[in-house]
Image (cartoon, rainbow, N blue to C red; front, side, top):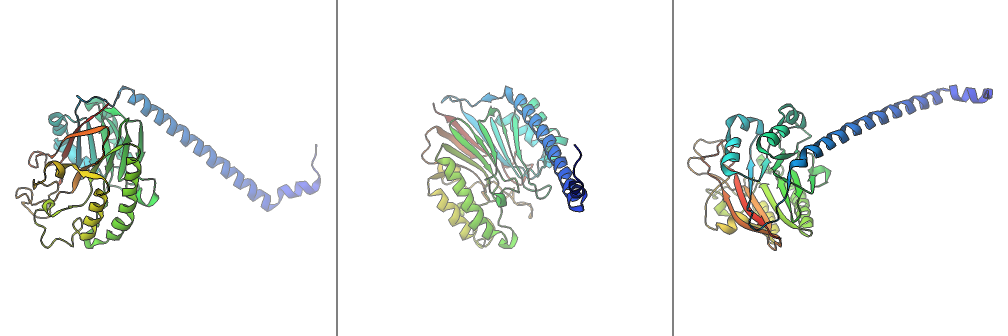
Length: 331
């Protein structure tokens, strides 16, 4: 039926044309999002299929699980040095957590890392990359055991842009791999670190602890006691050793957590970080202990067997030294 002339004019008016144009653009964006969703769903499906050969976590008191943490100070730079291959072959870990991968999704895909770790070493890998700038921060977890769920970050936007946290949920516990922000030269990020990050991060961990046992590992950027730095004198104003940072972290521990290495080795002066700014720091054992395994005190399902700092002269591909935690999972 032919429309009345007044209605024809209305449709052909400039405002109506603009509306029609907006509708077309909106439809175009909707189609684009739909295609993006389909692509993401296919990728997720592919991930699930490739993960099907990953074993569930062993709930067996006789099975000792070995977890390695290492701040690699750039994974791409580490790969040619063969240190990663050496640590996998000689330490035979079940899980490896990385900090400071300095990777982005594009580079991970270009280097085919997910496929390499899965086919060569039987590890499935999870990656959280910095989205603000390339070649900065980043975390990853390699595991032989399929988690129930995976989450990235704290779900708080201001903290989650630098790829600093991955959490794997297993039947009996949560594994958190975290790279805590450094307070920076001149302590320019100290306020953010203490008043914002620590506050929200500790609350995040506590919320998980209320559900299951928690294992936290990472470069936590804190030397919490004098024994954790080769020479504490005159370093109280340096990032990682300020009074505010130590008070914040130690206060958190007192709410029900254990520094596993210090609990098992109360008098050992071993370090996990050796600055390259001065020659001979590593050889002279002039370091800081910045890397940790932390568990909740009232663990119901996890039994820690050992926690140690690996040989600083054996794994030299980074300015950090790998650390290890051995534990079993009770029925």
